[in-house]
Structure formats: C-alpha cells, structure tokens
Length: 168
Image (cartoon, rainbow, N blue to C red; front, side, top):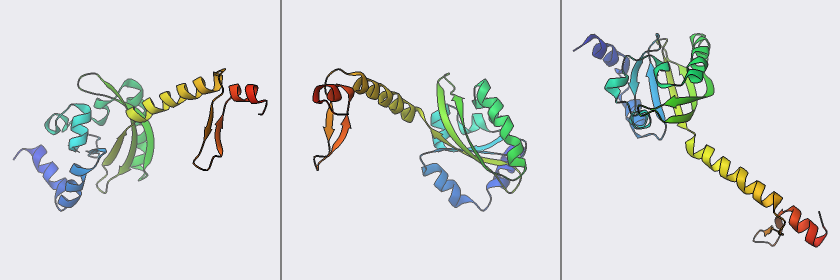
C-alpha cells in the first residue's frame, strides 16, 4: 500500500458509515488534509468536476476553481485553522472547462483538515434569471395582467391593469 493510500486509510478508519452517506448525498463532498490536499471526494464531486477520485487525491483544494474562487478559498483557510466553519460562493472549473457556480460550506476536521460540501447553483441561477425576465415582461407589458389565487384574491396586478381598470 502506498504512503498516500495509508494516510487516506488512516483518515477514514472507523467512519465507513459517513462515507456511505457521502456516496448517496446530492451535494458534492470534498475532504482535505491539514495542508489543503485532497484526500477524498464523493461520486457527486467526481461527476460535477469530471475528475476521478484518483485524479483528485493529493491535489490542492484550489486546483478545481477559477482565479477568483482560489482567492476566496485561500482567504477561508485562516477561518478553518481557527476551528470555525464558513460558507461562501465560488466557481469551480470542471475538467472540460465548464464553469460551475457553487455554494460551499466548509468545516474544519478534528485532524486539522477541512471538509467541504458543495451545492451546485447552476439551475438556481438559471431559474433566477428566468424569473427576473418574467417579472420585467409582466411589469412593462401594456396589456392588463391580473392573476388570482383559488379564492379569487388578486396575487398579481401589473401597470397595464392599473391603466385599464384605473386602480393601483
């Protein structure tokens, strides 16, 4: 067994159950040692990044991020060395060069390393852009747009409706 494999085995001794959970969760999981080198990633991380566990092990945590993300993450190292968790947004760059916006929750481990849970924000950001566009279309439409709930109470009333019906 290689030195790296022995170190990884030492980190995961006695925590088989959490690893099983990590393999079934929806978020990407990254675990690093006290030098910020990758010791473990789950299957979601592998799919998201395009890198296999074998390709990730030993790589610095910032390897997977754009320049701005690298700065943010390096700034968070001090927080975790003080034993504190943190949350922030950063952009991962996949093996194919795809930019992936992530919400990262990082926490120190007992041995001085870090565990990070990465939530993919891509779909959320797409929905937010669609919602913004829809709101602008409704707001600026000259046509009356009125939306009622199932109890026939007005839920949406745009400027076109105000002009036609002469009510704000």
